[in-house]
Image (spheres, protein in one colour):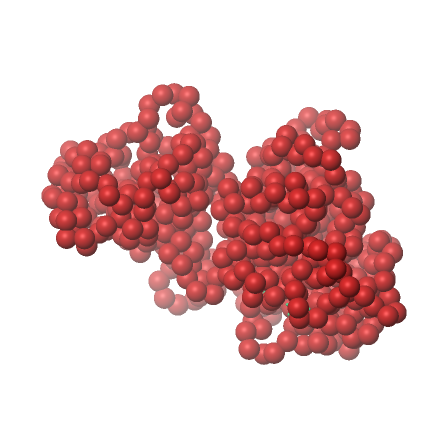
Length: 523
Ligand code: BES
Ligand code: MN
Ligand code: ZN
């Protein structure tokens, strides 16, 4: 029996009940809160925030003069408020670097880092002073995202030790009083809160051990999350998957005694009417609930990490929820093929040939290259559902981790305009990506003597040949592929991201659904 979580109600989406973030238009001294976080720029004089130094009893000026605190990014400086005219009792200055480099991306990280830093303080009410370089609403959304991301709890199966801290009641303070600006900022905070809640839901799924999150359980939880957000959901079982001819997904599933599932999500814009011939966004996520490698089995060292091989699928599920709750203006379909990759007695073996739903035959050289197999059928199905523009997300290759490390996802696809669109949206959403080339000659590495293609191209350019395999199943539609093998899980904690699942790509996929007016290129 899988362990049961003590804290969590698995019947209901657990990220739904978070309290809203209050937005106030007030000077720092007037923010009614226990603890007030203030981003502090390098070279800010003590007077950058009027009366702050006096309120701290001179501590701010002293710390700056002694260089105990300099405002470098992620430096923290805590002080008590001695001025009883201030509403806040405690201050936390967070270093923000030079003002001109402090846009949305950094502000999101500062909010997450300071949010994490105040967790141990157990303050019931925490304020955050909105400061940065750029559009206020954009900064405010980023702050709401960062604060919300800091609420994520990785240790949900612990039965001993202190309970995880309760999230504080957050307030974001802006100095501006103009009602149009305040309104826009409020709306941005609501949006950021929701997007990051959905990121946290994806992190929760990716954090689940594979004995709890089997493909069936993944589908059940995904259906609850999506349905609750207003998304239409269909869970296809084995017989239906067989009828559709998904030989790649079924091939991977053969080694496991757990049956596969194909999750299908549909968002239709409000009113249910949209111009025929308009774009339909198709999101496809890799849902391997555990990757042993199959018969081409992985080494034992670090294999436990492979419970998060469904992080791409979780990103699609949770992005669909956000897309629906935020009422994206275009139809969006989501497809998540889910299975374990196990070396059971019926498992596929190297040399086996599988026939995809699209009709292409694949010679399986390495059963550990299973993600591209299930995604091949997933990409085909998204097109059957009418998707005109495709994005897939997958913890696909170790080679991508070698190429780009742990903080940047690989971005692949065609045509360049579509790839650029995804790139812009991703970088704005705080999911850093970098484009990788798909030159035709790499395709040689996937040539099979006996079938249409092999599933592996050897060690050179491993993340590229994986992407080129996927390209075979995109039907020539605009397609982007995010390889999140390095970014889905933080091995080392960072100030803004604890060890564990990151929730990467949720916000990118969701925000992308709001940018269709910019998709004015010929496919
Ligand atoms: N899920 C893995 C990729 C992965 C590796 C994710 C490390 C996160 C961290 C994927 O299914 C896989 O095993 N890929 C193989 C492909 C190879 C056999 C061509 C790999 O990268 O080694
Ligand atoms: Mn694998
Ligand atoms: Zn895998």
